[in-house]
Every structure is written in structure tokens, then in C-alpha cells.
Image (cartoon, helix red, strand yellow):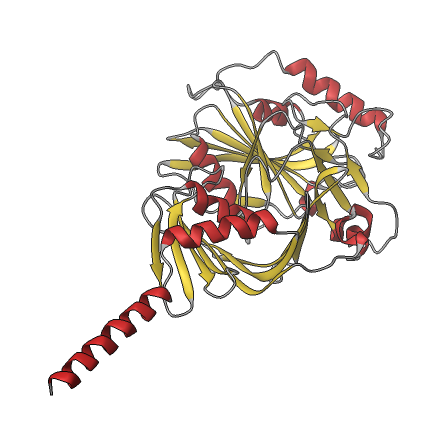
Length: 411
């Protein structure tokens, strides 16, 4: 009897030892993740990303390709709204492509080294490695890390990352705000380490040809170059005479529009409602409020924010010509004062100048320029360039408003 008791005890201890050997703690997983990233040559992943911003949830299909040392291709598609954008990094720089409109917007940036994105594997793993206060859990199939969100976006505070136990491939990501509300969710349906890519995968021209333009033409894509002349906001504009990368349909009209804008830039004054001084975009909109020659601003699909800060209301909205382009400017007042200027470059293109701070909006990259007196957030959505300008909006509110901008169904 005593022998049987001892035998059972030994068997129990042996089982516990084996069980303990099969488990990994947070430290051992982190060490292995560091090795995975250090030795990684390439990867490719597909999945869906949901943005819980504004009044309507947005869902994007995501395709991510990476090749060491710095080649990236991210394709974001919203089938419901027929929106497709490609973020591309290659030896020539960083680009946002809108194939349907035959437009290429160029950045001066070391993205994504200076800030990451939720669908990039390196970004997810680095957030785990850098957070010494990380929380660790294990479920049936995944290791789960709860860490600080390291995105250049003040609205995102923490994220939970699910990694497959067997190979550390990403499975699911949830990024939350300071109130623990999930703002971004990514589900990976497929992920592969070490794929081989065709050399055209990261080429700008090849990616533009992958989707037909809405005009049905095969003309060369308009490329906006950061070296072109700057407009009054400090952003680069492709209106520069003699530019080789952007074609201007009527240079005399554009030069006149730019001259008028520049001549007014020094005459800004406080608005008649006693609020803060109106933004440069607002004043320029007032000075150029008219229908563009040869095109109607009504052709624009007007975009408006669906998530306004409390106490803010629409002051007015008007059709304008901005730098020779048809557009719409909407001004908001109340707790904060700001304006949103929207244009849709066609035969000429606008670009980010690379002098500001780059922010992650989830579905695209935005540039924040300006100082304490006034800031302007500029981003591209399906060929539309939008500029949110304010002297009073905090950065977190600017991001939240930009993320909520959608086509106005009443227009």
C-alpha cells in the first residue's frame, strides 16, 4: 500500500514537471519574438481592419507585404465605398497611390521607422518588446499581450495583441482609447513568413497599373513631388510652373489663384463673431469663393465630419476655387473653431511636404504642420485632399475629427 502511494506521488511530480516545461512565460516569449523580428527577411499578410470612429463603422480589407530592408506595400480597400489606396515604400520614397483616379502622392519621410501602423508586424512586436510593464496571458491557441500603443496618435492608448502559439504569427489586434473603448480592430486571415516577391511588387508604376483609372485612360499617372513650390500653408503644391511631375491644365489661372492667395496671406484678421482669428484656409476660401472655370464644384462628393467635439456646430459652408482647383470649405465654431478645406486634384496634384509630423489615421497617413498659433492636418482620401486647420483644436481632437470625415449623404 505504501509502495503504491509513493509511486502515485512520484508520477504526480513527474507530470507537473513535464507540464511546467511545456509552458512559456512572458520573458521567454519576448526573447523569441526579438529573434523572429531580427531574422525576418519578408512577410505577407491579409485580413480586415475595422475603424470604430464617427457614427459609422468603417471596414477595410488589408494586404500587407514587406521585404527587407525597407520595402513596404499596404493595400487598403473599402468595397462598400469603392475606395482603394496603396501605401508604398521603395527606393524612390514613400507614396500614397490612388489607382482609380490615376494619382500618386509622394512623401518625404522615413515611414514607417518614425511611426508604425497596426497592421505592420514590426510595429506590433516592437510595442511588446519596449513595454516593460506589459501584461501577458495565454489562451487555447494564442499568447496575448496587453501593452501601450506606440502610434503617433494621441487618441490610442493601449493595444492587445494575439499571437499564434506555434509560430508567433499575428492573429488579432485591438487598439483602445484612454476609456478602454476599442477604436481599431484587425483580424488576420492569413500570414506568411519568408515569401518571395516579384520585383514589381514594390514599384510605383506597376501598382498604378494594377487597377484601372476611373477615366479609363492609360495616361501616365500624375506624381506630386515634394520638391515643388509651396503654397501659403507650407504644404507643397503642384501648381509650380515648369514642374515636371504634375501637369497643370491652365497655368495662367493657377498662377493668378496662387498670387491672390499669397497677397492675402498677410491680411488675416479676427472674425466678426469675436472668435479666434480665422485660419489661412478660411481666408483663402473667402477670397476665392467662386465657381471654377470649366468645372463645377458640385462634382465633388462633399465630405463632412460625423464626430464633432461637444459644443461645436457648423458655421457655414461654401464652394471655392483654391489654387485653381474646385473645392469646398466648411467652417465650424463653438468650443473650438476650425475649418475643413476639401479639393480633388485632377490634372495636377498636391503633396505632403515632409516638414511636419506624420500621424496615423488608420486608413491613411496624415501630416500635421504649423505651430502654437495654428496647426493644419492634411490627408488624402480616395483622391480628395483635405486640410483641417485650427488655432484651438488639440491634436487628439484633430485626429478624431479627421477619422470621422465621410461623404455627406445629403449632398
